[in-house]
Length: 285
Length: 309
Image 1 (cartoon, each protein chain N blue to C red):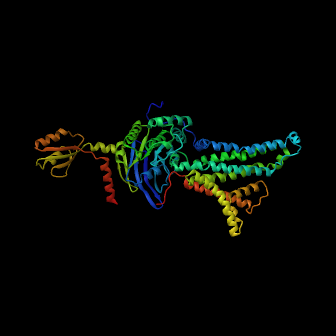
Image 2: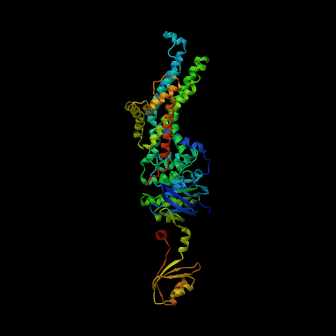
Image 3: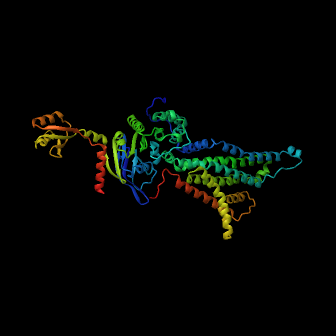
């Protein structure tokens, strides 16, 4: 119908499947995120290190190039290489989360837009999944996806014996990044849901990591214990990743405790989200 | 007409406080009004029908779907215009309405087409590429209406749609509600504390007070019956006049020596009343067709509720 025919008419066309509705949330959130040029620049910059690593791996297997420089090997591509790769990319991922995460839920809350979402056939879980998918896909693109591509490149160039010896690395690259992505995303979404101002939510995310680390150290010093490390989320992630990549890591926290604590933090964030992401809040009167 | 909303002993409770209690009613009008003073539970009822609040007792059905178990189906059939100011400030009206259309299930291209259409329909066509954050209050109300109808719902729930509107804005909103109702493509549930809004648009009304249902009225029927209701003021001394009027088939209530209320039968011809007055030498000084306005109905319902409580 032409727009100038201003009369009401119903809609009788096709409808999209219910499961696809959360992807609409993701699409519009992406559109909003990529309106910020600084963020696009930073996101592109996040690929510099993986590309450099790819070049290093290639050069490492190119005897002609190596002989030109008179060396036999540039670096040893082993579990430690992938562990450090994920640490660098994880740090960049954290910055990316701090830039993107706070703007995901807080504008909807600040503008009271949640009733408009939930009066439609869209569940709260779909809404959170849709928003989370933004962070998960961005962080995946800079962590485990390039990690696995580097693993693939190394496997192709190094041959069968290297693959046989290091095949266990592939799922651990995914798992190590996965837990990091889960914690970052859940924390960013929960803070974004509880703090309506975008800037304040970003600051709170940094505070959780840095104050948590400081508080953990203070607790260790005052209480003469090692359990304060459980408050240091960065340390916990590193411990889990070191555990997965079989790397020596000076931490008083065991791998199991670190896993448990990270999963507990994620569960707590989920509970915070469930409390806040709803059409209307019922205030105790 | 098939029922739109069936309330079956519906109760809602927050923290040991009863917000809605034992609501029982079947509503099936083209435009249904929800009336009540502030805090009566109107918005709570709407939010419960949409599945935002948990049901404490009883249940309700919207187009036959149970609000306890079939929320998704209900939400697919309804459009909702909330009372509070809600929008996404950084989005343009057209992309906001399009997103809402897509979330309701419209394919992307259809949602874009409908977004343009409904924005023109509500009168925001020229401002559709402006960011919602720059809209005036009246424009935001219209944008909220647009998002509620973009997907062509069967039932539109309007929560205080004329809140904060200036008189021309209110008139425009009422006209839109009239048009939508008369299009026959959807039914309307209008929640308001403004009697005039409900009276002008609705054919059925449910009145709530303190979470309880105090009155249900079919305004169409009330209007029809009230047309045959007269207030008479006479001079002349004839005690038998009322009796004579009753002999014409009317029901008569004498309120004072010179005033009476007359409920007229279907077949009544006014000329007979004048003839009777002439025969008995009675002067009719005032004759009013009086119909109970919604205000009368509302006040009576409030009085009755006070009497009960």
